[in-house]
Image (cartoon, rainbow, N blue to C red; front, side, top):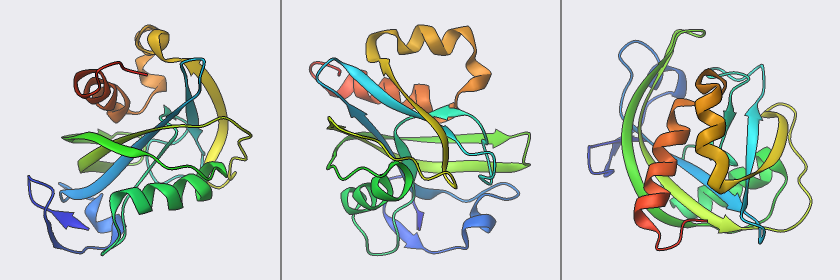
Length: 170
């Protein structure tokens, strides 16, 4: 779903076309699920993903379908990507542009950030996710700093939103 710089829908475009060339600003979301121990669930994107393959990222990220709310899209994709039934709430948003040199594609997104709590099993879809890990939220930035190329470019931007918009980050 194409959007303006305020996140208001302006039209639609094929997914690959929106990620090619200069890219087109489109709606996206990044979900962070955390547990009572203050750990956040990360996923490593599958090798067959179109872009940012094999990179560690937040619990789930994708795009809402036309007419679909961000929270409904997040619930849909949590189930599809990591086999989790959970709800998450929007805590903020950001806009970014990030080329993927490996695939030649580009992200140009108005990205909603959602957080939610989850305790239970995780069943990653191997077409979407190669592995998952629970990591301490407070140590995540240090972990990223040790090997920034191992992580998606939107991960730290979404962490900024969580830290700025929530009274007590995860």
